[in-house]
Length: 133
Image (tube, rainbow, N blue to C red; front, side, top):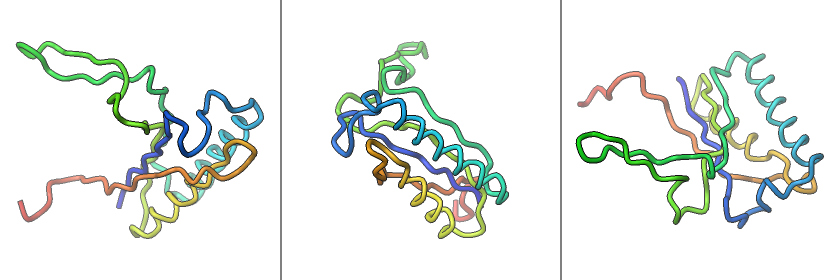
């Protein structure tokens, strides 16, 4: 079964300092950890795809407006403190394995090398509508 793992970061820096304040060494350690995670998942045959995302200042919210024309708002919802920082799609034998991977990703190093313990959402990827529909 495929699962989407969504990595959340805090724009307000409530859980840890904002990433744009980290030292170059802290950023390299964090990215190196993510590279190691991806390499292991690939070697284990579990990685389908993974990507990091641009920060909230680069994000746009789009809705259909009058006549279907796009109405664009900059950034994620203003009232949120967290933003989606990256994602993985993994193919695992069990839901428990997807949770194990998410928990490991959550330990990515942050400032001072301390684990961030950031939230990682785990969603089954649906390939078809549920049978009960």
